[in-house]
Amino acid sequence: MQEMAAGAEQISKVITRVDDISTYNKGQIETLISEISRFKVG
Image 1 (cartoon, one colour):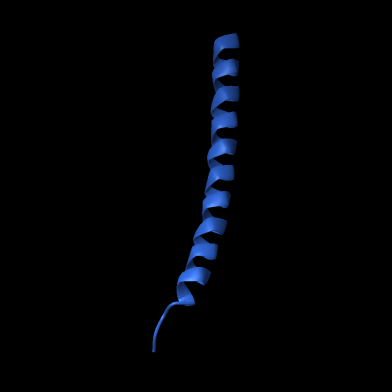
Image 2 (image 1 turned 180 degrees about the vertical axis):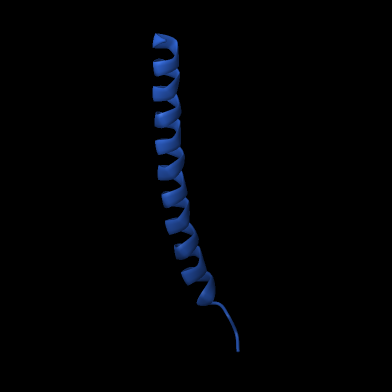
């Protein structure tokens, strides 16, 4: 039972990390879109 609890805790930590990375990537993509839009012609 203790192994299951430890496994669940690890999964929770990984999910939190994935969420953090996704949030960071979203911000980076928004910045990239903003910068690319400066070069659009027409």
